[in-house]
Length: 221
Picture 1 (cartoon, rainbow, N blue to C red):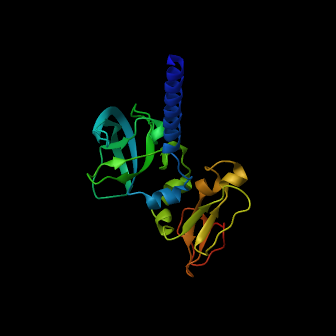
Picture 2: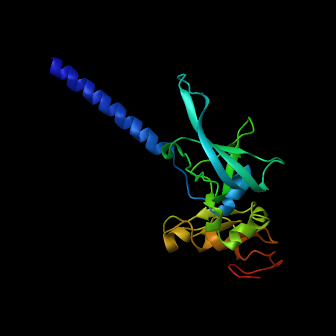
Picture 3: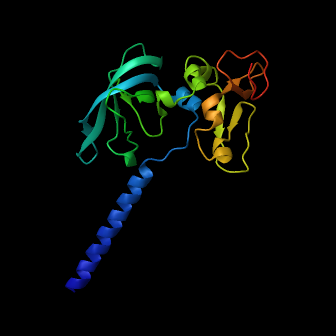
């Protein structure tokens, strides 16, 4: 009898453990985003250095347990999108399973950081956001932060994860980096923006200068 009770408790604990593992594993899931999409859907887009970090309490969950976040202290270098203020910190979850972001805190590496504004005015970042070392970004990506990406916010970028894939509207651009190069940091991510044309259709455009009124897909001006 005791053996059955022990076995029953073990099975119950195993189920709870597996349920918890599954819950954590599924807690951070998101579709890949082209840098332009990340720019358009973010509240804040900044270039910054990370100069420190600390674990902080940000409230309690529904069970009364303390919620921990990592607060990264930053030195903002430039704001590309966001409110007219300078941010000195960003917040993220403490582990990657909860979409937490790990950043270098030695103050030497610059990052392009996209994130969301909380109701209290703090900036929160996740693995699903576009967080990239500034030196790893292409010249086109850097220049597109000034104007190009914003010009394409009325377009939809559709991620192609497997063949066949297609667009359903003239206002869409098909993002094929994954099926063509097996990476979401391919040619279209690094060197192209999806721009709305004069007839309200959208097309991929390569380059960083202002496009002509009429242009062909995937051509420099």
